Length: 613
Image (cartoon, rainbow, N blue to C red; front, side):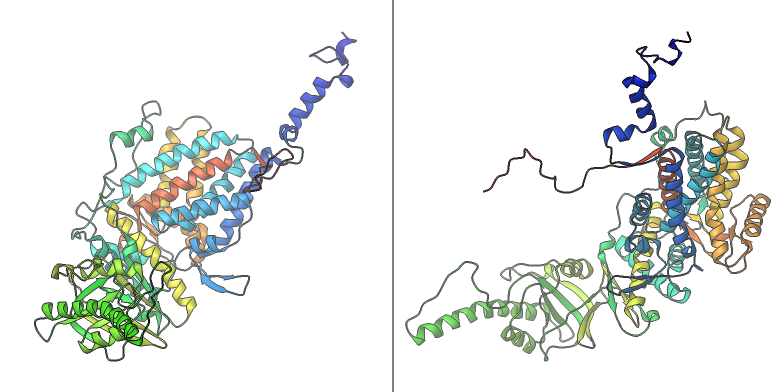
């Protein structure tokens, strides 16, 4: 026995000379090194430290921007460009992020913004906090899989609570609710005075495009505000089966096309002078000095017909042997264009039966000076080379349809605008098409003294439009100001954790602690004591058994409904779902391997054949 104690258990040869034993030792040490010796590997607990460190780093960058009292970030480009913003989506898109884990979190957060229009910073904060709390439990010896199972159970419970505490509007949300949602979304990115001005424009724009009736009554909660008491885990059905048996009713049948809302910018006056135009604003105008600058009761004709001499599409030439033939050629070319202009003039005389009526021609192609002169003498306002995107919006805003030929013009092809006028601004001239009857497209005119202000308002407007459209489709909202997160954390500790068994309780407790990162950050950015604020919110929720949020001006607990602070249902649901999935996946990573193939064109090998043709 002593003689064989130093021999290999696989082949009974000496351990020092055993190749199989040496190979087994190498495989246990670093399996990836055998596949790719040049690979860089981060293993075991170090991978969690790397992922959690990247998440905390990104969290620390965006943490100070959360809420109406958040600070701004100044982004400086390589060529000296400067951009001031506090929008999390803009920061993540503009920053150069090199860490792979941070890039993954940034992509998830921007997907949240593209879907719901808000909640980008919340995703980054919650992912970072989930990994931060999990790291503490892993250091104490708890396996990441146990924490991940607790996260999944807590996520399902929180989403059930979200369905319980949402405020439904069966007949559609009222205008007051939509303005509250828009104001909540805009105040986190703009100054309060500017956000109040733009709130009305955002709601008007979405309602113009949506064409949905507004509800007038107050909303009601889906059920009692008390936390649901789940039964034992054996009796609970998976969440996917519950969704299949009882499909959600908040999805709207039709989607709202926000591309029909044109955001036009003018570097002029102040940001408070930005307005909503119930029509369109074109960034070009008429090209003839004698054309009218302001018209009322306008018949609008949109067309895609060339009113100028054009060269043939194929290489061809015209030969003449005398001056008379040349004159006849020029006359025939001119007559071809003039006949089309005369058709427009005759149609205008037909439809404009009174002197109060006027005629507007908007052409996607060109109009030569002689044709412009003929139209100006007839009192027709003509704009040439209109942009293609504007041609579609004009038909939706004014009515009618675009024509490609003047041979069969009919009054049904005309649109109507109560007022058309030009506004010169420096070297540019803008055309306003306003006072239309039944618009399906509109314009938000953003003004500002400089480019920084205009860009900041434009980014906030896009988020506000998506947030209002989501609420209009879901027909429900969730009280904001951190009220839902505080209530959900308490419900996890008092309800779900008591019914859970085994080590899953640690994951549930970790999820409850991580949910409080949003109200903590709101309190910190507003200058209040974090721990004192959280204790006040929890005590107020337990005393009233209702959702209690944080008043950022006083630091005291308050009812978010009184303040008019509401978040979109889709925003809350999406950020909780995305953050938990991403944090769970990063938590279960046990190796970070940098040994991937080079992306792009495949590199040539020694035996590759090449086609020299």
